[in-house]
Image (cartoon, rainbow, N blue to C red; front, side, top):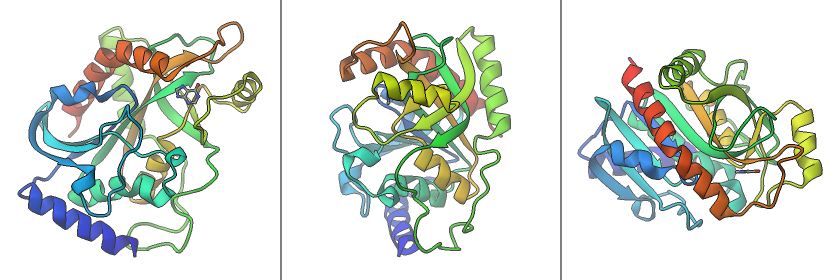
Length: 273
Ligand code: HPA
């Protein structure tokens, strides 16, 4: 049973971290692990040593749970996340979010690398998610609902916390960081999209496309955990700017954006009550 597994993992982590109680959970996307440098680290656990945790398979993700202090708040950060395309089940992909909630986080902050569909976007822009479209072929809530975790039919009217979005936009404005609100569409991957698919995704109302974040957001909503998510635009996927893209391009663009993302996240964490 999922609840029993979450409880087992939570107890293990509490024992290993001398009951460190994080207030904020952070998930870092591809090429965006640099925020870790801003954390005064108290404890670090490798995924492979945590019971029930999946182990990350992509080289660009190193796979650690990091506990420490940032901007005066106790945080837990996932360095490396799990993607559906790696072959995990949706329950595995979202398991760490469940555990972080049980460890006590009050907010979940997520970052990802994404392709820009909105023609006003430029490489290394930030996009603050104000909504999403889920095109993943599975759902982390599929199966018998465990009522201790959340309701059967969670409402998704305001998936991304309005207050956190507003604060993030204010921070971006203050530091002159290019950032807009937009709609993220999640696809399975691992291949990037064809030009026709990018046109389709734009047509259905998305501003950016990526392969993560939506399962974590759904599970956060299921557990009544306020969630904030931001995309770093790593490639442009609209007419006139489409070209071949490699993982190296995505990581290079993410690294250019990283200082902006780090500043935004630090200030956002500082502003939380
Ligand atoms: N498509 C899907 N996922 C992505 C992209 C993209 O163009 N860029 C970064 N992640």
